[in-house]
Length: 448
Ligand SMILES: Cc1cc2nc3c(=O)[nH]c(=O)nc-3n(C[C@H](O)[C@H](O)[C@H](O)COP(=O)(O)OP(=O)(O)OC[C@H]3O[C@@H](n4cnc5c(N)ncnc54)[C@H](O)[C@@H]3O)c2cc1C
Image (cartoon, rainbow, N blue to C red; front, side, top):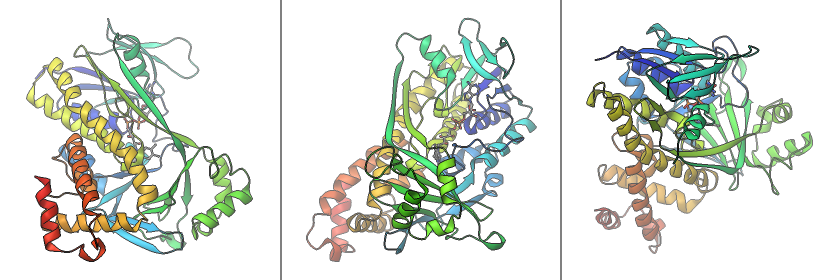
């Protein structure tokens, strides 16, 4: 196999993992990152502090032999713990016994990936901001902070892994006649709030769970960190009656938290400081096409498909991109036209599907997780999955625990199952009949 000189723009989660896949195949890989070396400085405010890693991401990490190393720094979350307004809690398992998603620190994960990549001979260059790409000469131009002029770097193949606001995508778009581009901001933003650890690093909330305080139009979630702290994220409208624009005084913030999220305000002694000092960030979906140019360039990860975070799949989807690309490198050895064309053909429908599901899951998380009818439906679906594991896989499991099922297939199957369930939820006495075998058979017979 011919060794290629490959440049990756962006040393985020996806760029770093992609580098590992490429270096393991013997390519000469160079990664250029706008920000300073993350190993030498603290995480930039406003980027999520921890993330949920799940089977699709883990399967990519496994392929390059680093799954166990990453799981060592992750906390399993086998379900979500719902905090109702009256203080009652309700644990909802995500899947079957033994299945979990994993809370991992973004910076710790990124640093591990960069270290592993460097150990494979990849050269990382930090504080190099991509500003232009010359498609004739295959040269990337970079600016360095406080330096006049720019530097160029030529590569045979270039990957744009520079995130949701990718400069590489803009360059690609400007140099393309028919580039489809769609971006959509939801009307909610998010703010991160740290819940400190208790005495001697103890966890003040249940450790092994993703906590959700669903409040219909908004919600608070919290994921555990290894040091006993939790990272809370408030997803909240930018404007309106209950919104960021209304919470403008410390008293208003305290009152709102005490009323809406009882118990939490007491766990965050500097709540108002954090609230006013931490940024309020927006949430965007980005869809575009084509991702690829002349067998020499491809977008990947958020640069190709930024998602809202409500299915916890953005990074997982980007990691799965790397896995699919790797499979195509096996299938079409050194035929980069074929590799990249097949990559976009395969991944674009999947990226679109998970983008839709991520938006829909916001509604589920913030408003349905506390709804008794929804909970009953989920209980029936869990029973169906137990009894007919191949025929009925709940939507969440199709996305999160089913690595052999493409996102586009998960969306289609999930929609079909949802339509069937909505019909059956109208059955008389459904609450009493939820475990009735005849009812289960009727539902299952609708699937084929
Ligand atoms: C609040 C929130 C919560 C999330 N939770 C989850 C979750 O639980 N699970 C999950 O799977 N996903 C989650 N995501 C999504 C996840 O963060 C992204 O999908 C993931 O970070 C994408 O990785 P990436 O490498 O493609 O992009 P990024 O992580 O954004 O990395 C891009 C890199 O490119 C660099 N860069 C940018 N511009 C340039 C330039 N011009 N030149 C050079 N370098 C450049 C950036 O500095 C950055 O390091 C969440 C996102 C948010 C916002």
